[in-house]
Length: 323
Image (tube, rainbow, N blue to C red):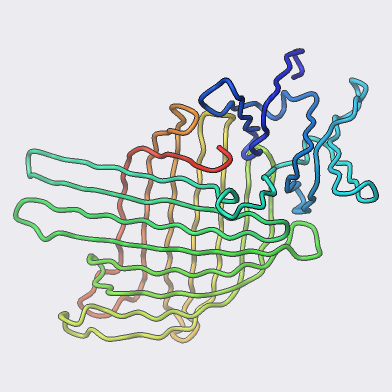
């Protein structure tokens, strides 16, 4: 470390400016500020991602440098294939494990609210899992909400989202695929299936923030509740504009926002918008408290159907993988 401390253990990975190290004599994973690391060395293979989207694979080491020069990290796959990167340009490090299940990172969220006055009970469950490889990655997430109150009708909402991305030859660019499946009793949606693809770009990618924009095309099939007058099935061709923002503060807070704008190309003038956001405050190494918000809106819903559905919840999150 820059203050002279030395730590010997197993490097688990780097994400959001935090280097995770496992020590044989400590139960929890140690969280280390990446900007405070002066020297690092490991013979294990890692996948290293930089701010411009480049990916490297190999063992890790840092050469001694003079104080006025930037600290660099050397990634060596073979003696003939060695890359030198400035430390501040490294934004993610993951284990290149041969074991399939050790390549996953993610979290599980759970929350509940009860109000005695009107006997309202709300229960939420969700989670995210990420699979990281050299030049591509995939992520899946789900969110379920059940709300019931005395004298009212129970409402449910279930959403599953999957994304996959692959780096392009140009810095900061990649192409991405997207799928989403939604059930919402509030909007009378039995099943809304959306698939799409597009080109994405990192506007910012550092150890403090990640900002991504995606533009592309998609298709959507919506099956509405058959018990409602005017219900039916819709097939829509859409444009896709996606924005994602992640802001993090070392070992304390993490804010993530994702917004999806869908202009309906097959019905000009009709627009749909959805968003998901979460704010996490770390309690311990693997446990944090979170507040989340979701919402779906459309300006031209079918007759007798709601044009919006939104809500918020809070609870606990447990992370797994490198963390």
